[in-house]
Amino acid sequence: MEWQLQDAKNQLSKVVQKARHEVRQIVTRRVGRPSLVDDLLFGPGWDDVLAKDVKARNKTPNRDVAF
Image 1 (cartoon, rainbow, N blue to C red):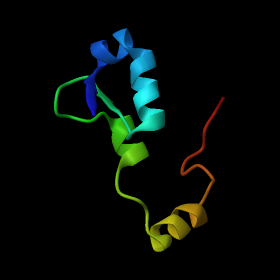
Image 2 (tube, one colour):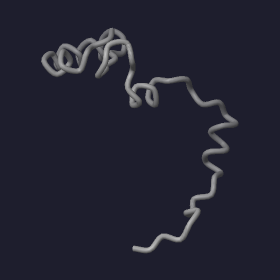
Image 3 (tube, rainbow, N blue to C red):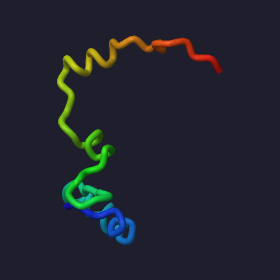
């Protein structure tokens, strides 16, 4: 089920209960458009090749950073 943010705030316990016992609940700021968080958490999964490439990426900064 999809909830607008204000409705989800007003009925938070109901949203959580439905998510636990039924299907995932989607909360959006605008009707019909999932937020970036929704896309990241519930979007298409990563295949093994992409996951391996992400883990193998260089962890050092690309430029010098002065603190």
